[in-house]
Length: 427
Ligand SMILES: Cc1cc2nc3c(=O)[nH]c(=O)nc-3n(C[C@H](O)[C@H](O)[C@H](O)COP(=O)(O)OP(=O)(O)OC[C@H]3O[C@@H](n4cnc5c(N)ncnc54)[C@H](O)[C@@H]3O)c2cc1C
View: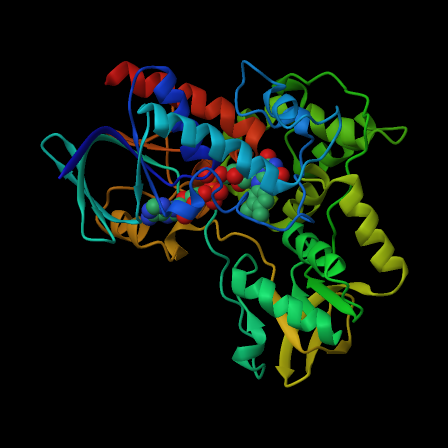
């Protein structure tokens, strides 16, 4: 049985950075994930040059103490939005170096179960191996999207995983034939797929459907920053917060108003009662997401061009039913629309609800009472130090219920640094 002081489950950005941070502190962790995901995870595994980071390169350093590290390593000017695959390379190279130096160990496998033992934890891998670790870190990241089912729509014409190699192949076929395509969801995943179709020279119509029909806004550089507010300055009621943000962002500077909330967002979320968090998810989240998680100007220019040429139509509504070659949509403002389509793609985004996760390890740990769902069933429950239990930690999107804004690199790297220091102190 392999034994390690710390087993990190998941080798995306969160797990990889924690491994590197621990190595800096003289602790040799074991990082567990399938080899192709090492350093890249779900977010940076794309090989498509059209997929861009949605945060400027200057803010994407893995290292809080070297904020320009990524931009300088990749030789990018201020304000540039790099290809996501370049960011995956940046992380992967650092991980490979640490593995070559013998400061980080890796296991090419999936963790399928974990149980407490005398010395900490016993972990079973999908290849039959067993591991022993004093501490476990859950860095399992973005869950696969919920499967979408459209009554009457042929299952074979529905793509559930927008990130798989098979999806790229199906998009290439669809682009060759200029098929009409339906994208279910109008957020960041929809943007990625339109960028891919644009690169492939797709000439057919694309329809995106979401409940509100909101599309991510564009970054604008350079933006004029506003000072961060004190927590007490931020109104309590959601409707008042929106009004307050509008006033702060007057004269067209709404981006700066939203960005200025960043240092306070986690504390604000943590201070809200559950009922206000639930109301935020129900009513304000779509609005928050498109303003807060913006896209690169180049990506926005392609979306705008497709829209103005009538090749991309974004509809606010719900899909009611389908039949071969068409779907019917109940429009948000009333009435029905019938759309011709040959292929439907699930762009609803990562599943954040742990109780609905298809991840075998998380399900087992939940069933055995080793982890508990986070607030509103988002991720896992964790304390202020990201501890999910005794000798158990959680990182990144896994802690979304506790912190809300903990999915992007600038937020996760701060959390990772704190967790690395805390783990190193107890080894
Ligand atoms: C498509 C996409 C694009 C994004 N773009 C940006 C961006 O431009 N800028 C930004 O700041 N943020 C971006 N994000 C946000 C992203 O969540 C974070 O930047 C970060 O990548 C999260 O890393 P993670 O390691 O927590 O999760 P993930 O990247 O989801 O990685 C989790 C890893 O855990 C592994 N895993 C899961 N279960 C197990 C198990 N049981 N055993 C072993 N391994 C397991 C998975 O295989 C996966 O490799 C993006 C997110 C997505 C989904």
